Length: 511
Image (cartoon, rainbow, N blue to C red; front, side, top):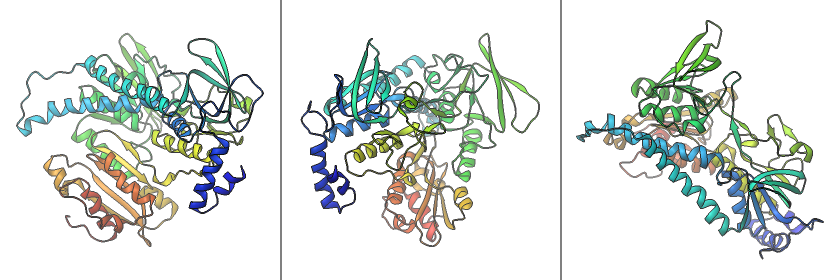
């Protein structure tokens, strides 16, 4: 233990040597060997037990196995991958892709000289393709990743019964108790609910139900103009639904740079005509009447109520940490409001119990949870481990895509930070023009004195991939000039990033 502690503050070469030594002492690589601490119990003993097999949990379990720990992962759902892989990120992207193909064929092919006759939507087949993608990925976690890293996977409900003990109500029946030197809470989140809006996942649904409509609803109301609402609204809007988005605020995509959000709204509503927005509107209640949903709404600032009618209503107002029934209180784990309280190393007030992902502070993003899972495991192994929360990207997978990293212009103004701004439209990008997909822009914000990148915001084709140039730049403290002086292949969409950086510290070439 002294070796591990020394390693965290020593030079890299010495740190690596000492860390390897401490790892061999604490976590013998021979499978089945006991951990560094013995427990007076007949239950199976592990170096690390992860409760939750979502993106944060399964990645943490795999990493722990790679470091030679004896590790177990527990999840009630059964198929690994959590909300993200089963009923979130992955299936929604499959439907976004399929619906985009249909929308292109129905509305854009003809201008390229491609004629399509008898075009129609086969929703059951579309859902089968979605399910196939999900099944392949979830099976890959359990069948390949867990086996490769020798992770024991328990399918059941895990609950803390002590600071080193977990009781598991197994899905197949019975209860098993296991011991752990370290525990990671990675139980994710659940859809937030609205009082007076009863969710049945048939007529009034969360994102889970919206992924499994058996036919295209004639009218769809989406409550919430955030990531989930706009993605799922795009799916069904492309396939023919009349989509109305109801949002309490007077803007869409809260937290996104306002200049970018305004252009995003214009593209979705006026140019693509995918959805209508009813902003500054609060939901008062909902009632199913026959085969319709009646949604009662009113102006957020006060005014007369009205009834909106739809075939389906999607509730997508955000997510809340899922922590019920985990035994946190009995184990003495401290909370910070709705989330588990952790330090900079993702440890709770009980040092051997860690928490990551949606159940701790910060953005509820799968990739943020993954980074925290790795950081937590590396810390418990004496290898340091950290997460740079200023360089975590966020993407909305509509078309065009919206991708951001770092501070918005509004946040910089509020903090009193002086900055330079550079904006470059895709309309001036040759690749975007050649593929006739030129909506959107790249916006770069950099420190006025040092030119260090503070935030980058993209709205356009393939923005979810291009954002990582900015993420790498911010991770390594790059300036806007640094990115601008990197040679970008021509013609590429990425040249818009180069030009926006040029506009930040000097002048762009093509506008």
